[in-house]
Structure formats: C-alpha cells, structure tokens
Length: 254
Image 1 (cartoon, rainbow, N blue to C red):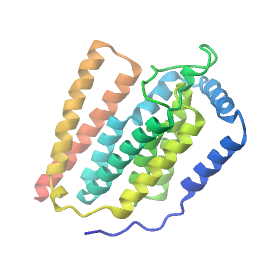
Image 2: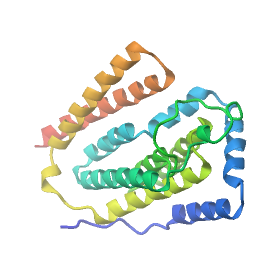
Image 3: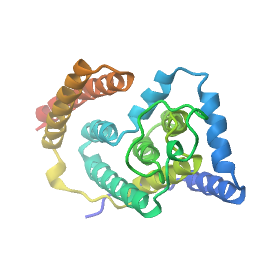
Image 4: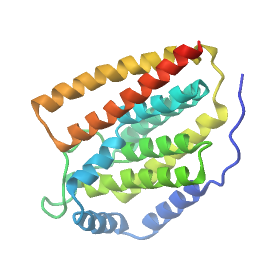
C-alpha cells in the first residue's frame, strides 16, 4: 500500500546540475581548470575541515544518519532503506560503466593538493556527492525552510570537499548530486507502508549495528589515530546516543 506522497517541490537541483553539466561539456578543459582552481583555493582552509566534511558523505556514516532520521518516525524507514539501496547500487554501476580516472591518476604529482588516499574505485559519479544529496533531500522532507537551507549547505560542503581533498572532478560532483537527489525523491514518492518496520525493532537493529561499527572505529583510532578516524568516531557516538533515545521511546510506546 502506498502512503501519502510528498508535496510538490520545484526540481531546482535538477536544473542546477543539468546547467552545470552543460557548461562543463560546452567548455573544453573546464573540468580540469575548475578542479585546479578550487583545489588550490581550498588549501587556504584547514585540511581537517575538508576531511571532516568528506567523512560525513561516506556511505557507512550516511546509513547511520539515515537510521537516526528514520528512528524518530517509523514511517520513514521504507524511504530511507529504498533510497539508500537504490543510490548505492546505481552509483556503483555508473562507476563501472563510465570508468573515469580520478585526478591523482591524471594530473602530475605536486600540481594539486592531495589530502587523502586514492580509492580503487572510479571517479564518475562521486559516491560521496550521491550519498550527501540523498541524505540532505530525505532529511529536508517536511523540515522547516531554515533546516532545508542548512542541509543544502552541508551537502554542498561535502561535495566540494571531494575536490578539496583532490579525489574528484567537478563533473563527478554534479552527476553524483543529481543521482542522490533523484533517488531520494523517487523513494519519497513511492515508499511503501511496511508494518514490520513499525515499533522499536528497526531502531534496536540500527543501534546494535551502529554499536558494532563504533567498536570497530574505536579500535582503529587506538591503533592509528588520524583526523578522519576522529571525525567518524565523533559522528557515530552522537548517532548512538540519538538511536538509544529513539529506541527507548519506541519501547515505551509499545
């Protein structure tokens, strides 16, 4: 059974992303020029800021944050799960299909700032941008205008961090952001009412999985402390507290 559809929202992310993609395609060399310009400009800010923003866009972290969002209202679980699964699968498939090389594999060493290790996956589209747009779009559903603006800024910061750390081209960000937004809107429009996802059980499962991930992170921080590990542990600790509160409330209502 389908539940209520979200209210109509002007698809400005679609217009913005398509306009940006058109500019990059029409201007030869724009992708590389814009990457280098922003990458060098971003060096004026602390590397820890960009690395921290990048951590928020990791798939594991986004999954935990979506679990916190869904645990506050059980009816959100279907949209969170379907949107996340669709975005993750499509992002992986497009990376395999387009096989675009990342900047460190194309540009000369020392010509730009590389702040992170180079993943083995391809560049297009940016998975962090997909995850960030998915997260921001889902969390913005039904939120106040101020909250929606803050979420848009957070998503933009996460996306730009991928250029700042030297791992993605601008076109990767636009494509990834468009993909994440589209998956979120589709999940919100077509989510199913699943009775099994009501109550405290989903929040309990999320709490258990997040606790295990937190232990894994804590051991990693103990073994080799770094900025990204610290950001991950901080975010997951906050999510654990929020999930514990949501689980407790759901149990009391049961």
